[in-house]
Length: 103
Image 1: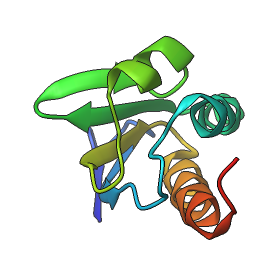
Image 2: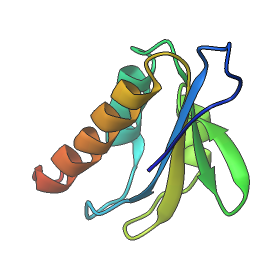
Image 3: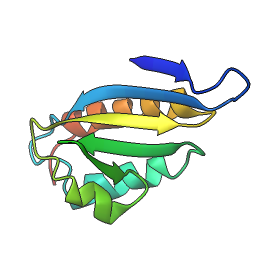
């Protein structure tokens, strides 16, 4: 986990964590849509970084373009006052996906 402030007088917090997609079918349409819905519930700007490309976690098209198949790793980055909460919730969601029976 990396937690840093961009400027001493700024309340912008940046949190990033490496994630690994572990559910059998990866982040396909249904889980990707839920991932985006949850990401949009936070004020933080949330980004997926895979192979040096950045994808908005608030865009279903971007999340699908990230091609997060089973075993894929990416960095989940959030910028904003609720960045820590956003990353924690999205990590938990990825774990929930792994535990669910695939559709």
